[in-house]
Every structure is written in structure tokens, then in C-alpha cells.
Image (cartoon, rainbow, N blue to C red; front, side, top):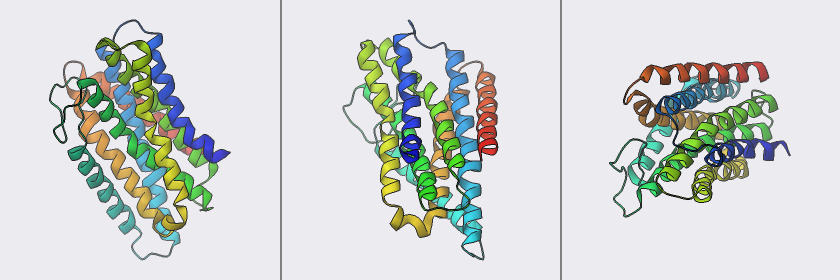
Length: 259
């Protein structure tokens, strides 16, 4: 039951964020959008450090590794390069941009916008799944409180992401229901990735420290490559910086207080 809740909480955050399309009349104000993106970035950075990298190193130390930093370092870099590969292959389009990235395709602009957020959600689903897998394996460094703190944090940062997907789709002429559905589907990859990770725990258990760091690297790639440039574009980039501080602090408090 706890595993199911942990897997579904992030998706619930996306659903609630996407539902804002039924409550808001117009597009999200640029300043609020920057604040929300910054908030999501801060949570992802804090989660990468407290919920993934630190447990990775501590777990490697318990496994009597002479260089406990090796799984964390190699996993982190592998996660970065994995997202770099996906970013180069999957056709997607970022907010406030008219230039698609990834392989050439005939997809509509709105479809590629959904793909961009779906790409963001892959490492988040992996992160939750890896931590829940560690909980299932009864690792001392991963408690139910740790796992729930990460799930809640990801769910909170998924709320603005859901709204940021659905609102532009509505502005582009999609119906409220279609915009909501697209936003919700962009987050569906998270529980799927989490379920696959938990089911493969028997295979992945020996390399769990590596996988924790892998998820951290993938999340950091999204922050540095995708979210930070969007925060710095246009005017009032300091609003995004405030959002980063707020998100980072909240995730740090959640992980330390609940952990």
C-alpha cells in the first residue's frame, strides 16, 4: 500500500496542476511561470542531493566499498548522459521557443511541448522508483519517511509543471478537456517508470547506489539544460531565482524533517 501511494503521489501532483486549466481563464503570467519553474528546479536540486546522492554514498560505504564515491560519481555522470541521449532523440519543444529539438518530425507544436515535459518526468519517476525499491529491499539508509518525503516533494513540483503544460495548450486553441488530458498524460510516465524500477529490484539491488546517483544525474540534467535557461530568458529572471530558493528549502526541510 505504501509503495502504491509513493508511486501515485507525483502523478497526483501533475493531475492537480493540469486541472488549473478549468479554473484559470487566461495564460499564466510570465512572472508566475518563472516562479513556478524556479520552484520546481529548487526541489529537483535538493532531492538530487539529499534524497539520492547522499544515500548513494552512505549505501556504498555500508557495502564495504573502499571508494564509496565511485558509484555516486559514475552513476551521476551516466544519468546526465542518458538524458542527453534522450534529449537528442525525442522530438520536443520548450516553452517560449519556436525551434524544436531532437530528431526531425512532423509532430505539432503542442505535441512536442508535451514531449518536453514528459522528458522532464522520466528521471523523476526513476528517482521515486529507485528509492521505493531500496525501501522494499529494507536498506537501513532508506526509510518510509525518506521515500514519502521524496514522493511528496516531486508531487509538489509536478503541480506547477502540470499547469505550465495545460495552460499553453488551452491558449493554443485546445479545449479545456484536451489540454487537461495532455497535461495529465505528460506525468503518466512517472508511475510507469517507478513501477518498472520496483519490479526489477532483484536485478538492481547490487547496483542500487549507482542507480540512486543515476536518477540524481538525470534530474540535474533537466534542471541545468532545460529549466535554468527558461528561467533566465526574458525579463525578471530574479523571480525564478527566488523560486529556486523556495523549492530547494522546502525539499530540504521535507527530507530532513521526515527522514
